[in-house]
Amino acid sequence: MLEVAIRSKSYAVAGGGRLQALGEVAFSVGTGEFVCLTGPSGCGKTTTLRLVLGLEGEFEGTVARADGRVAAAFQEPRLLPWRTVEDNIRLALPPELADTDLDPLYATLGIAGAGRLYPGELSLGMARRASLARAFAVEPSLLLLDEPFVSLDEATAARLRALLMEVWQARPTAALMVTHNLREAAELADRIVVLSARPGRVLGVHAIATPRHERDAATIDAIVREVVRLTPFGQP
Amino acid sequence: MAAERPATAPATRLPGRLLLGFVSLALLAGVWAIAASVAQSRVLPPPGAVLAFVWDEALDGALWVNLGMTLARVALAFTVAMAIGSAIGIVMGLHRFTDRLFDPWLVLLLNLPALVIMVLAYIWFGLTEAAAVGAVALTKIPNVVVTMREGARALDPALSEMAKVFRFPPARQLRHVVLPQLQPYFAATTRSGIALIWKIVLVAELLGRPNGVGFQIYTYFQLFDVRAIIGYSLAFVAVMLVIEFCALQPFEARARRWRKRDA
Image 1 (cartoon, one colour):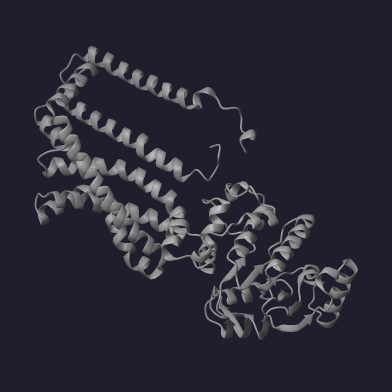
Image 2 (cartoon, rainbow over the protein chains, first blue to last red):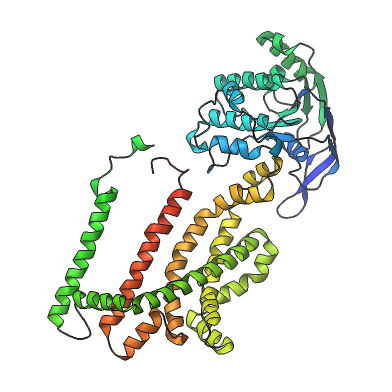
């Protein structure tokens, strides 16, 4: 579904010269697979995601996506402030989905009744839900999530993670989520891709055998310890 | 955030504000009437005489013809200036090379007096309607360009990326992503634009048109008829106020409705 084979990505920096952001980054995400990309801050997680989304310019290597719709939830909700929540979501829909009934999705994500509000009237948690609703509403074949729960309180983040899994499992697509939170990755992922410090390269890929619904706190702790032991990247 | 604001004072509520506005205007008319009665001069007629003149011109039909011609020129010049200025401004805001190439032109035009543009347009293109409207538009275009260029520079790349990821068609992106971001700049340049343009249109009419408010003021200036000069000016100011309250403000309120429900 998604084949990432980046050899190198660098940026021009002010005053000349180039900064290498990524080294060898190769992994794949299959249909129905939830992959988390993690690593120390500044290692190029978001850059990798942006390359997949086609939002970055030149780089060496290839990113191959199967045909089909792509959706993303960014770190900030990126809703149009001058359109209601409902309009924000409807505007993202392709023509063939224009008449979809979105109420069940709103209900699952806990934003039923928020459709007529403007984004400025929502809390960050609600705006994140709206952003997730938009991503799921387009029924993507590839879903990309960039730290969608960062800067939420832990209780809200935990609730949103559970909601994310509920909507995703109802219609599993290829999903790639960037997170710096290893516990989050251990809770959600089928596989965890660990990047090194900048320039980011793949240190290791961990497949998690325990089924998602059997992962309790102790299991998650064990997964995190195992990932850190095999691929120490300087940050727990 | 309505609850955190102090209770609305009576003077800032709409009926109260309107009333205060009328009181203020009545006060001005009163001062004018007193000054006129003290001066007892032909060059400072009392408000009543000016009103009577406007009434007579209105009955005669001349008022409507001249107001109409001026308004048509303002509308045309405004539309041309906004269309061309916005297009150039947005392009300059998005392309640094174009911006650097044409910025000196902009500085030159911004500092060229409207009168010079007007006179040159009449000399080069004759005393025609097109020359008048074109020259007025040309004096306004640089202001529109500067404002819209700022708007284009301030476009949020995060929203453009969102639109790209979700594959917004170009028309949808323009209407729902780009134009709402440019709206405040558009509103600012509209407001200053209309105020500037109608004054320059008067100069254009004075110099080379056979009708319109500017032509009338020039005619009555030669006759030393202050009553008519003030009458025509106030009549046109009244027209602009109607446009302000019936078109500009409702449009802006509509465009701003997402900011704060209670504002």
